[in-house]
Amino acid sequence: MKLSGNTIFITGGTSGIGRGLAEAFHQRANKVIIAGRRQALLDEIARANPGIDTVVLDINNPQQIKQVAQQVIERHPDLNVVINNAGIMPFDNAASGDLDDEQAVGLLATNLLGPVRVSAAFVEHLKRQPDATIINNSSVLAFIPIAVTALYSATKAAIHSYSLSQRFMLRDTRVKVLEIAPPWVDTDLIHKSGDPRAMPLDAFIAETLAKLETATTEVIVDGIAALRANVGPNEHALVEQFNQSIIDNPIPVA
Image 1: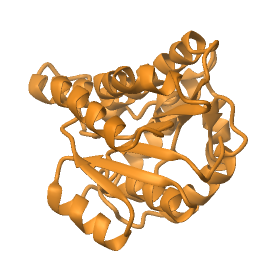
Image 2: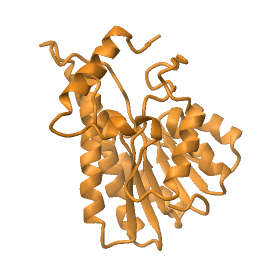
Image 3: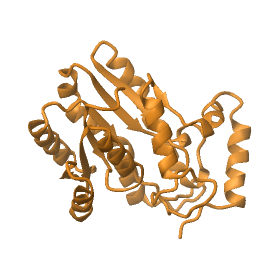
């Protein structure tokens, strides 16, 4: 993917990885449009980055997604990149009978149906562009889950699977499908703590952009290559070892 001269729409662009990518692309002479739920945050980012366009979007509202897509395409007819980044990461307990159904449904709507709906809203426009890309933000947890965020991990595995299918179905078009699978990055997705196990955001953005330029399928930072390669019939031992380490040294939440 070329790193300049694009018109890029990114969901979940008001914080964390989304904001980091948005600002990095903006600095590289791309036209960037960020979507988020909170107007105040969108206004703050626009003031800090003159030239970035913003739009309010509730990723859980299917009708609003269609309306926003139409508005964005009308304002930016050269739009050629869509980044599905919006996501949430609540904790859960797959061993408990006390399921928070509202949380579970919201998680599926945001992390799985959100990217599916956004892709559908833009894909016909993207097909008409000379060079277009859909980028789906999954997670290393698509390949090695954290048991205390079981459903989050499952949604990211689903996004990985969906990206494989989407890439195949678009194989004869000008639309490429790339998947970014981040490691634990030190953002406020859960709690920005400075934990040494988390990759600093600026380092993640820099390595991700460097790999995006030549990527054809996935973007995996070097530090998690072994975790990505773990999938297979012998994956269970590393999954157990990985999750025991999380139990022994929990993820900071405050």
